[in-house]
Each structure stands twice: as C-alpha cells, then as structure tokens.
Image (cartoon, rainbow, N blue to C red; front, top):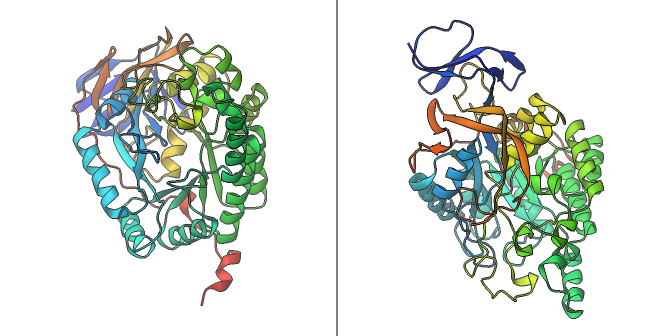
Length: 476
C-alpha cells in the first residue's frame, strides 16, 4: 500500500519528461509507471504537470544585514511563501559579522530554522571575519557537519573581505570539501560613483542603479574567476546581472576555471527603466547588483540556454516599505541609507514557468533543471531536485492553464508588497508535497512551523577541487 499515488499527469523527473503515475511511500518516490497499485490517497493530475519541488539556493531569511537591519521575514513567513510558490527546499544564510564566532552563528540560525522553517533547508555561511579559529577550527568542523557552502563579499563595509582573505577561505574550502559563493562587485568603483552622486544631489532611489556600474561587477567577477583558477577551488558567482558578466563566466570556463554561476528573476524580468514607472515605490526595486538593460536580459537568457549560467535563484531579501525596513533612516533618506533587496521566494517559479514553459522559452525540462535539479546537484542536497525512485517526494503539481495577475500585496511573506505587481503569468503550482506530505492544496497552507528538516550538504562534483593548481606549488 503506497501512501500517495499521483495519476494522469505529465511527469518531469529531472531526467526527462514522461506521461506516468508517481507512487510515494515513507516520504520518498517509490515507483514511476502505470498501475502502481493501491494507495491511501490518490491525487488526479490529469491535464497537469508533476514537477520536482523548487530548490531556491539563494535567500535571506531572518538575517541581520551588515547595516544592522533585520529582514522582514521569519523562517515561518519566508518558507510559507516559498511553499505557496512551489519551492520545497531553501538555502539561506547564517551571517557572521566581525567579532562573532562562526560556530555560534550557525548554531543560532539552525535553532531559528528548527522552530519556524516549513521547507527543508540548508545554509550558506557568510564569513566576514577570518580571525581567531574561523579557518583553523570552525570552518573545518562546520563543513564536516554538512555546512559546505561559504559566502564572501567583495563589497560593503561590515562584511567585505580582502583578496588575501578570499584566498585563505578558498584554500580552506579546498582542503575540507565545499563551495565558495561570492557577491562580486568592486568596492572602490562603487564608492567612487556613490560619492559623486551624493555630491551632485542625485540621491533618490532611481539613482541607485547608476551607483553600481557594470564595470564594478565585471572586474570583481573576473578577479574571482582568477582566484578560483589559481587555487583550483570551485566558486559560485552569485547574481550575474549583465552581458559582460556572462562573458566573464564563459571565458573563465573556457580556460578551465572551476566556476558555476547563477542569475535571478529581477534581472531577467526587470530593467533599470522600471524605476521610471515602478509597480511599487521605487525603493522597493532597489537591489545589488542593480537591474540593467534589455540587452543584458537577452544575454542572460542566452547564457542560460548555453549553460554558462547554471541556475536561477530568487535572492529573496525582504524589507518592508516602512520604518522597519527600507525607510529605517526616514522616508527622505538617500538611497545610500536604504536597504537593498526585494522579495522573490514566491514569484520565482511562476515567473520562470510563464516565460520558459507557457511561452516556450527553453522549455519544461530546462525549467526543472534551472530551478530544482541543478541547484540541488551543485550544493550537494542529496535526495532533492529529481522525481526518481529513492529521491524525496518533493512535488509541485502545476496547472499550466491557470492564470494570475500579481497584486500589490498578495504574497505570503512578511514584506508587504509585490515588486512584480501588475504582471500576469500563466501556470501555477496548485498542489505541493514535501516528502510526500501535502503542504499546499488549492491555495491553502497545510504545513506547520518547524516541520522542515535541515539538509546536510554532501560534497558534490561542483565542489570537487582541481588537482595541482598553480597555488599548490607552495605545498610542502
């Protein structure tokens, strides 16, 4: 007796698509085929698509920013929003600030997630302070415990690390098995641009995109790729936003550099021109790197098609449009004193489904790969990202004919606005299962806070360092 059998749908397994039924037992996929036998519950998916639950590998949840501002979302509100949008696994951040012990930071975030998270989840460790025992004890111990993703910033005062520190972290990750993710922008270029904008009085939110020139991204991406090449340690380049950035990734891979990369929906579906007539207050569109131009959008889509870019994450970074969030320093504050980021956990999959499946851009199997299979593979999330026997039964059943127009405040997070308000999409996840349990049905959440589980990261092929890199010549 199976626990659940899903019948009649088109099943996208992560290894191809097939008209087949799916049987679930004890939280995992038990069988795929026809006439799979009796079940305690049967779900009719005739006319619908049965897909792996989404894996969002870049989201900020219940996180204190470098400026000391807390995200709007708790783990409960953020993961509720994720499930409602078809995402069943999330990777958020355990953010170390200078002076904090990394092991304590990770334990504190684990406790928050244990109480509130409804998605299965893992963490990226933000490392901003490599002093003390960070590199000699905490990082190796945490990586051995399955926290194998490290995030570094090349920009922002409170979290920025220098080149030598980046190399130290890369070498530590190489020795213990992990992936180093980088927010790559050149700090000096941005400081120079910000100073000139402030001096000339151009401080409204719509001036923010100018303050982060594409040259800042291009330089830092290039430098990070060279560091990966020098150490032989794989890196993930977060939120590539521009055409030249895609070119940097492509060129680095052509040289053999161990690099993977992502982009985000706000770069695929927004441009800097949206600040002129925004669907919400302009501060609600501020993010870093900023939105670019329509030509950059086409370059990003081409990079996804070629495989230069490996996945699409939300970079969910929720701040309310009030004094608790974007306007913590007043509604008339300059953009330099406004929080960067926007919500995206719930909109990521519907936006991409509409573009890739409903409108035919790249197709169903690539949609599944970019939003579920590849992020699970890259970050070593064993059992996630595919609907094959033995994998976790994380399932999103999509109605491809369902249409929805986003409203001003229709998301299930705690941000209070939708940056894609007014945009219509075709295709919606109507039923969501997490490890075989129905957690969303007909728009109603059925999960309880804290029911998600932490996913220990395994060492994935994307984390495997190259043999004998140039830096190894210094080894004894």
